[in-house]
Figure 1 (cartoon, rainbow over the protein chains, first blue to last red):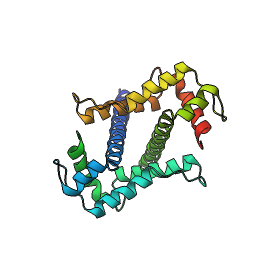
Figure 2: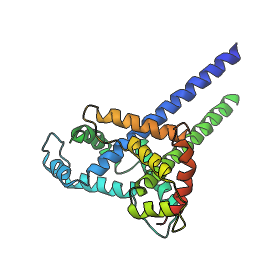
Figure 3: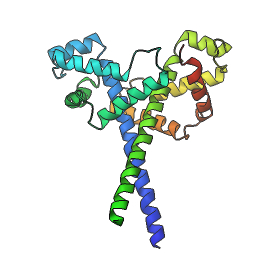
Figure 4: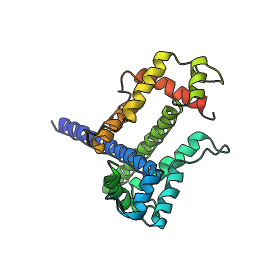
Amino acid sequence: MIQKTIKKTARREQLMREEAEQKRLKTVLELQFILDKLGDDEVRNDLKQGSNGVPVLTEEELTMLDEFYKLVYPERDMNMRLSEQYEQASVHLWDLLEGKEKPVCGTTFWLKFLFYGVEDH
Amino acid sequence: MIQKTIKKTARREQLMREEAEQKRLKTVLELQFILDKLGDDEVRNDLKQGSNGVPVLTEEELTMLDEFYKLVYPERDMNMRLSEQYEQASVHLWDLLEGKEKPVCGTTFWLKFLFYGVEDH
């Protein structure tokens, strides 16, 4: 009886963890969408001017996000194995999810905010 | 003493889970890289002909991967919230990681294989 309860609890915890991981995966896809949008001149202008209902970002904040973009989408470095490069990129994404990515962390708020701002742009 | 051991074990399990999740995140980035490559005419030709050390894919297999691409990078559907679309995309990616994505599953092998084939293309 107790064995059964333990098993049930373990199963439920496993499901909850999987659900949480899938949610984080969704967040990664959303982050990628936003970072991609930053390459769009129209969106960039909106962000600089706060037009079209988008929050204003300072040049500094935009630069910070551009720098983060390069960490997550590194240019191919032929001195490194591709899988090493992706290893590093995934660590940066992971750290951002965990709130450990400095100095982009301060902009995590912006990223979330932005998402709703440019959602249907 | 036992309490301490339990705590330590829990901590170690937590770290192992995080490491596993970060690895899966890396796999997602690699998958995205491969799926992106499928849009490149040169790579496509290599895949059809098996040239440049790349394994041959049949038209059927390429179509299957193209279909999966659309699931993971859906075109914007204005009748749906963006976050709903990403929810669905992340479920497909997740299922692929879990080996549950039919019929792309059969091509998971190809995806892995491909990765090494087009790695430094």
